Image (cartoon, rainbow, N blue to C red; front, side, top):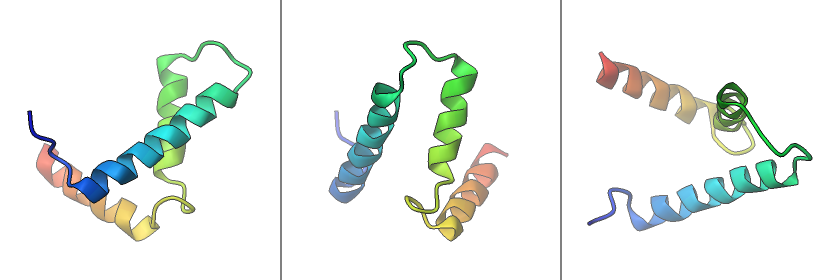
Length: 68
């Protein structure tokens, strides 16, 4: 099975996954609801320290067009 992400994108994805893992691991909470996880994912997705806001808007626009 081939990877659909390029090597650089795979590395970047691993960094983001490590960041998310650290967020949940460092939390004193043992369980999270689906809604709570989605909130965390949205906060990370829109974190300007991780992602250029212009890239976030471009991605959301492109995905909206794909979903139509």
